[in-house]
Image (tube, one colour):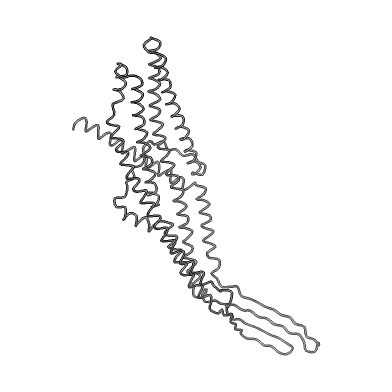
Length: 395
């Protein structure tokens, strides 16, 4: 095996190890945020409360008891004592319609909570992607600052020896000032992103020092991937369950228009007489449920329309993210190829020292090299942020 092949394999293994570590680090950050995020804790508590609320109106009404003590006049007719107990029944409760609807609606808070988790995870993952970008950027800018410091030191020495002038030295000083300023701004953005991640993590610190993004592959077949992602997406699942619940609401509304039955026991005592027996009543809901069925049907139609709208919107959004990621990866590859064709920085240094090029030419070449590397980093970051939308769709 040649030395070049050995070197290539070592570099490949090192890169793979760094990317695997980056993926593990980001996954650890995601797990930590899921555990500590304040918004998710609130959403979890609200979901549990909503589940309990769905089980509050599914039981029969309580029995009614009555007691009457009536004094007779004239006294000769004696007193009268009445006692009664009754229970009303409605068909939806007896047949379990209300219970089945409640069990179905209890699944809705879980899907709403999943949607909230997706929202938080997307924000956190994109913040991590930005943080990795600034970690890599600061590393690049620190190298540039170091080279600028060496350049200025060399020109100051030449100035002392009378081999250059103040104008050339001023250019080197300005180049260093620009490098330091750019690095300082990047460090400020890095600190701001760390604060954002700490806030998402419930105020607890986050450590993410990677300079490479996780190697998440793009779907090989987007349409097949989209079907899986769409069927499992919490918003789609929420609306699917909501549509089922709406259909049961229609059936429940119709059943509530049926008569309610009340049955019970009654006792009546007067002087020397005692009457007792069963009671039976019928309640006709002529007015209180008016338009309830129509409202349930309208809500069912609206939910079905919303389900179609959200699925189309989700498909467009994720397909756009997929296409963007593919295109940006290609752009980054083109940038890297162009960067490889630029002259080597060490050659530039030697050319400057030997007087083959001027300082102005040197700085222009270095700025071109620097801008190309910045474009590669920025393009990779944008591609990863587009991929994050695909990643979070499966969570």
